[in-house]
Image (cartoon, rainbow, N blue to C red; front, side, top):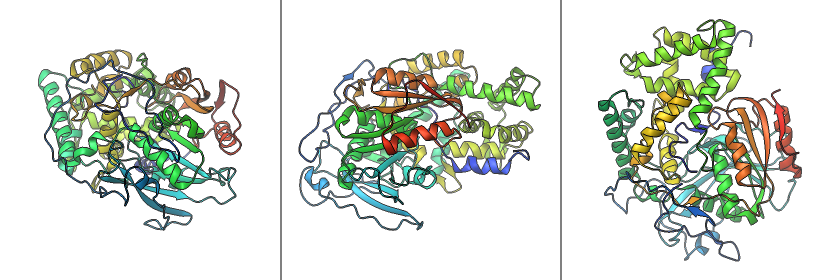
Length: 542
């Protein structure tokens, strides 16, 4: 990926708190600098494969920090490597599946080790955790019975995703969710205490004066330093390139001849990188809600969120919620948001700030029309002075619970900043001006991306995706997707010609198992029988 700030809101589906909120309010009618070392590719059973074939270096990440840290620090899950030497020590591991905790019928869990640094297989190891829902029918392909899945993020738990992934018509696959390095139950990124994390998320993300701008920069720097001091060398080895090497190692350990993949949102980036690095090992791969892998910056993520909010406003006006017209609905939300900058709403011992309100509002855009009624009720309460539900929504976006922050909150910036090069703070604020002009609400109130600009690790080699020689794979895009605008899917198949575009005409993030029988049928036919749909097919909802 190329532009900084592209993934400022986590692209992850299936949030538990949103489901709770929806139930509570249910309708009664209802390009950058090259790293110092190219990563060493994972060896196959017989050969060593090349690393990224094409890279570019047009951004230098000039404002990233250099911070002293303990290079020998071990975060949870770091351990000594397996017995042996070199890559062979990892390829000789045995995957031992056992009961998960808590136990669940049809589910098994396992862990394996991977090198922290793929350039140094004899150095320290990290732990990769995974869960599988075992097949209930004979596999369609005996040589590759596993389907790996990922819900997005970066940093969303693939193990959790296994619990609610739609398996209808896919009973011949073992559904495997492996938490990428840094996230979930794998070796995690650690950043700070709950209070320290609150300090960061409570920052005024859309500063209105020089003091607020400096406070945002200083707070971002402090958060980045805390992540480095608590995560150590992990931050230097948490790129998607590293993760793709992990996946191909696990493919070999499970005995799969080919790598079958269903990735949503950020999961499409994992899939695209795999296709670039390991095309000869790629099986049936579906990239749903494609991210932007190109250098085209004409459409930003805030554009997608503003499009989604506009669709909600049309519905709300038609139902008499918040105004007689869509413009009136949007004006009411905007005026309230502006007021929160100086008058946050107390919620217990916390406050619903402007930034947290925007995060909470964004959460509802992920579920499309099914969330409209609930959002209308919660907005009515919030604008009336009760911020309880909207703060819960913001906490869900930020992976915060009563016990603290989950791994999504820390893995998201760590992986994003490791993957994406940037042009520095000045460029970030200039990009914010452009975003605010094209997306008046989210482009304005999301604020600039300042965290990657001041991160303490350098970015990975920036892949210039070509896709030459890839097997056919599916790229699914929704015309009203909030987090990954539809154009990203169009651009992906232009950049990687083996991709076949499938379009869902509708709002909400992600298309599979989201209310379109047409999409679901295409996905199942491709995964089970290898049937490639006609190019440029469009599916409706229902």
